[in-house]
Image 1 (cartoon, helix red, strand yellow):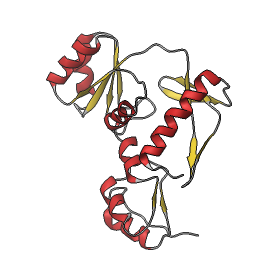
Image 2 (tube, one colour; image 1 turned 90 degrees about the vertical axis):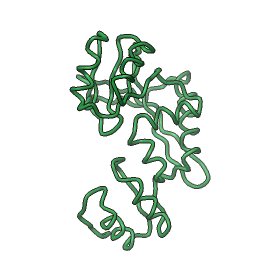
Image 3 (cartoon, helix red, strand yellow; image 1 turned 90 degrees about the horizontal axis):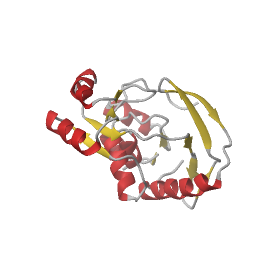
Image 4 (tube, helix red, strand yellow; image 1 turned 180 degrees about the vertical axis):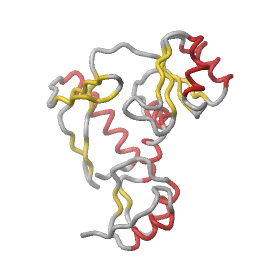
Length: 200
């Protein structure tokens, strides 16, 4: 049995204590502070790498990574002020989705905005936290792809179709066989994993 260390996810002392008793640090949640993880890398391998954690825990960083790699995604505007809300309204129109940059999942940290008059109120409901406004896109289905990498290569599981109820994942159906979706999904995921030096 490995060591058990109780501490906050952003506590450098707890993370250092864990690293001192470990051969490898691995994570199953993205809300661990990135700076302490980067410090741990000097003494022990950290997988996924801190750069992957940094991208996964901030929607803006994630979207910018996709843009850099040429991966298509919904148009968006970063929101940190009322002026940014005005820019989002002008650039994106309605409807749109306002999402906090961090700590949003299962429908949390999100507001669907049907009318631009609701935009400022929606941001206030989200605590005026740094956010992104994203154009709402109508789609037929959501699919996801899981990949795994070692130091030599990456492999991919079949696509999974995801069904949500009230913004929360209710059912995942696998495999979802569609080569027209599967091929580009693998190319895009491989590009992300290779850029981040991903392991796991």
